[in-house]
Image (tube, rainbow, N blue to C red; front, side, top):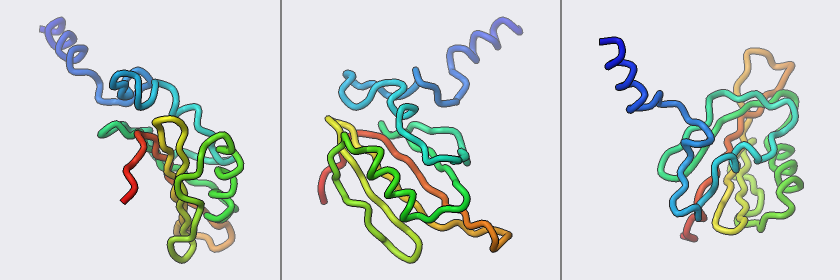
Length: 137
């Protein structure tokens, strides 16, 4: 019985996202490990594990003592080898978003001020998404 249960678990997978679990449709969208190669804003802390769905890998992170605008400026500088798809732009009070394209991959980054229990240390929450290039609306 234990052997059958173990075989069933191996066949179904654990449900967690790993480098090898990232989509590789014809190796044209993105390759395993590409998401992990994206830079992270200094002192960022992951709020969840990276997840893969519909050929997009995403993760939410937080970073103290900065602003959403500074986070997007960091990515504008760090992704200099990528083509700007949507320039880092304010999309509301204390919220910024931008996207960059390299080959057939697009990274979308959104950042906003997160509520805190202490007014002394501002916190920014931001998301990274890597997937196929999105069509222009």
